[in-house]
Amino acid sequence: MKKNKPCPECKTIMELKKTTLHFEREGFYADVENVSAFICPKCGTRSIPGRLAASIGKTIENLFKSANEAEESVEKELSPSFSGISFHRVHP
Ligand SMILES: [Zn+2]
Image (cartoon, rainbow, N blue to C red; front, side, top):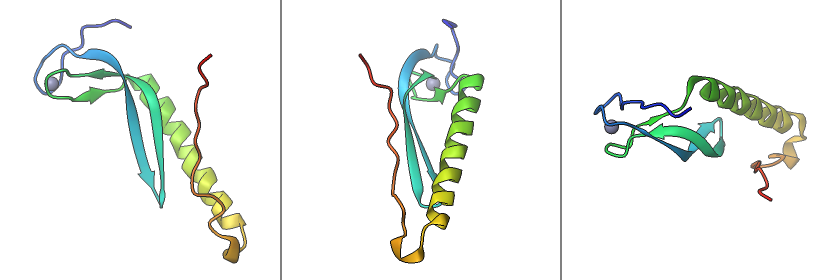
């Protein structure tokens, strides 16, 4: 997907790079690393391709939901059940 996508802010041609997305919800946060995104070299505006953005959004949504359910299912005195999940692709 090598397209010359202009920045919506300053019209500079954006570069396809890897970035980290940060999500925060109900006391949990999640970082999604090495996300392919168009990044403006001039003003730093980021644009995630639609299909990828939807896929990440759904994954994060499920992750927060699972975390909350795990929290609720544990006895009060043991809460919180866990404070975070780290999920990575292992590079060979
Ligand atoms: Zn820009």
